[in-house]
Image 1 (cartoon, rainbow, N blue to C red):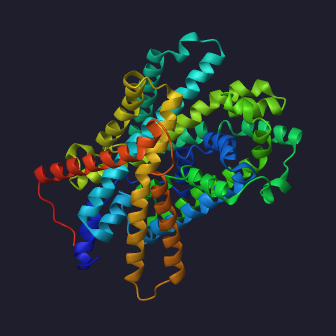
Image 2: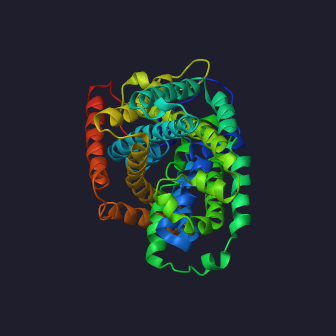
Image 3: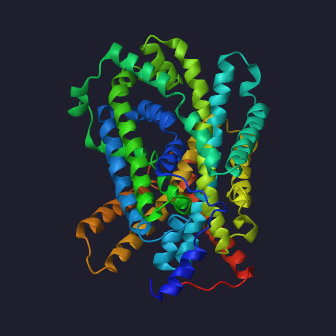
Length: 471
């Protein structure tokens, strides 16, 4: 980026929403929030159940490849995080590298992705809630009106938690996200003891071809999308230029190792119970039955409600800071940049995120007759697509940033280019999957919404008070 040091300082000021409190959160606290946002335990269970259906005995390798590809993209994020302190995450980094036009385009994709993600997590929480309540005999649990009220209540409560501030959110999510861990470990270890790990078949990829492994890796990438958003908390941490890369890499490696480890244990179990899974029996039911601990299913399902709710709280927390930065940059109305004087939370942006978190599942329920399970599948696939384009642009920007330096690292450039190529292939593949029904239209829906968002941001900026353009 060109310009004097004073101009750079002004740009960074415009890209950073400072918290209203002087308190700083530690690295461990933000890592916990990140693990909560990634739904580490529910995702580990879901991935362990469904990835073997795609990759068979190569499921662990698919997940490992997906983690490595995401690490390459996080290397691009870290290039910027070590140089700039911003609260707009990828949106801000792209703006610093390319200027406002591409920043506006990335903002359209990134912000819409956050809204869709919140709707997906709300639908997922409603799904677990309805399943648990039905299992204990509450008949209205699967009724559309009850699920809609549940979505509104869940999103409203998550928004209230995020409004209360980062410290309160971290304290809450730390409990809810990990309460199920002891029971999940007990059931998983018990199931593995009864069936055996069969590591040999997994290491030699028995009955699995490389095409299946690669296809599984593409599916596995969805389990890591969104980790980069933790960079939006940079201004909340001490020594952010050092801590943000540590936080991003820690969350990615912890989740990746957990997913791969869970796949090693559960793949033999799933291979033996594919028919039951295809009939709609939940992964927790299969694992607890194989372990001889069916009495653990309901407690685990109940605690998974808390884990998915914790994810929603986490997403609203760091997503609201990206929205507040977008409002400060005139892409959104100024009201969404307001910070609570006591709690330090972006109040307007928090409401902006909580509303669609409730509204999207309710709209799908009534306008498209889509129950929470189906809504979760649609929305989870859709929100992942919103991240792919920004990742590709970010990688190009990171390479540009490295080339500004006298001592360039060829290895660093190569790593970032690998991440860019992988996600570009994912983007192309999303249009060629051969999916049917709604799924085949999701990439086109994504492009249409990004284009609409870009136009809205242009209009809002045109009518907003003038802002000094970037160099």
